[in-house]
Length: 615
Ligand code: G6P
Image (tube, rainbow, N blue to C red; front, top):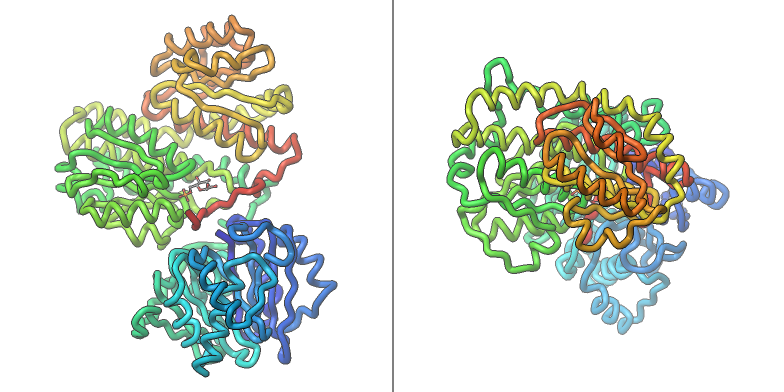
């Protein structure tokens, strides 16, 4: 993973690179570093820890002057997080300095070769191997940096987004990408480099997104020249105008991005169905589906591939697609699917779900499915992301930037998009009546206000968090559409509070987890009125007999569960297929409050990263 930032232009680079790194910390935050060119030499400072630690260290260590700079925030792959393994990395001569996001898989053999030629290494990283490989090529062939980078990258197996400069030619930064994102911001006689556009959004709205296997030489006063790494052919600069604004990537008065994003859900869901859900006309319009309707209607099955929270949204969609559109669905972890030799035909539709659109395993699963002839449809949040470009067609969730590492609004907006697709297909296939179709549309339209209502339980959820914050384990149970919500609730708690939590289908509890239940075990049970209510109530009885502490997520006005449970959190009533959009809200809040009470870093939980661009 990791985040990379660079600047070359007429301003001081340091504040731009530093602020950029803070915005990219969601990509990794176990160490950070910056290298600046001050007009005579490279000034470099790096440290284990967060960008804030770097800021404290750097300002006492080096001069922050210079109009060229690169910076890195790391999520360790090769080598533990420590000062030495942090980026940037120097080449042996000290002339070149590099930052890298990704993994060089053949770094071991390249390293041995370089060692045999006299190179030495300070760190355990693959990145230090790459910068020395570039140096070696440059020296041996006596060529410019750009050419040397190109030749070196042709020897490399793996994934990368890199930025490298040479102190003897401090008017250019060379960048390249394969498998990890890289954007170049084009300002007035200044250029920005970053893993996404957030570091430069207040300076320019014009950006070039490098494609895989492309590299660029970014020259002061001269501009950007892009080439294909493999065959050296020149590529046209395709400059996009960014829609992102600064407000979207700031906390807007909330203490944490996660809380802001939880509270943004009513609007995010509305933005996601706006223009698509046309209740008055009784139509759902999604061009990605419309343009490929034949493929959808002829499909033997849908295979959903995703990771993490997106996989949970995929699981919800299995219930939705099968129930509404009567299309068989399989939901796969992208990481398993890609290595399983799966049976895929050209009558399969693969739906890839990804908030970031950069998850390496999901991207690889897409490529595999395409190679076997499947039609691949993407559901992404980040516009222009790798997955959105790699898929045949797709639909964006319009959630806006999600920065908290624990995914919240991405989940509910993914379910919204998948519901729209399922409803559209159901109508086209005639598997639901026109009145039912209309009814479902109206219910979906009411969801944002109901989410708002569900958010009103915040204080009450906080009081429950206070009671259970010291528990060592949690169990989350749900059935049907809400079984994936139980998984997601448990994942949220694990991710940010580090409390062990397990999600289970409620009825499966008696095949194992019931053995764990005693008076110390809090059990969150989703028991909304629609969907196996009586069965879940029986499960609650079983828990009660074993003295487990029950936190029920129930429909407004519920009486039965209230009598049995220790606490009940109400959510508004809706149709069964839409209950996940409401039941997930208190679970997000519960994990948020517990993590906060335990003093954890809610937005940047340990060991995790927002976009997992390594497999
Ligand atoms: C990481 C994030 C999760 C996310 C998962 C999949 O693990 O921490 O929040 O659900 O990746 O990411 P994607 O961007 O593909 O949805």
